[in-house]
Image (cartoon, rainbow, N blue to C red; front, side):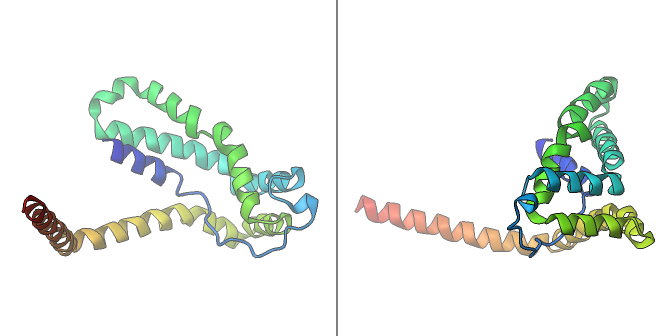
Length: 175
């Protein structure tokens, strides 16, 4: 149950854009991670990306997923939603996300991303990113699941080898 809940939380925020670390120089004070100007640029980006709406959807999704795991939770749905809102809702995460974005993106990067997301293609990326992320995770999970017996054999061989080594060591210690 705890693993499912953790997976739900991770999947819930798969709508957040993931990009490679910026190679931009951040030598100017106003361009440093967490500076007022860079935080403002991150918030501008979030507005264009409609992160507040995405966050609300993530809260609803996480709530529904948890309730679907145990129908008895339906009667406490408002409490579950309040919990998620309190810890992963937009007001709870926006400042930390801004700091995270400014860690990897310069002000110029953030402004360029904002400009991109204002375009038709940028909006399409925002609409499909969560689906692509989710479907990619499902694809990977299914590929592993299909070959789980092979993984199990590898793990069994390793653990039986360790068990045999332990038995040999114990026998030698008794001598």
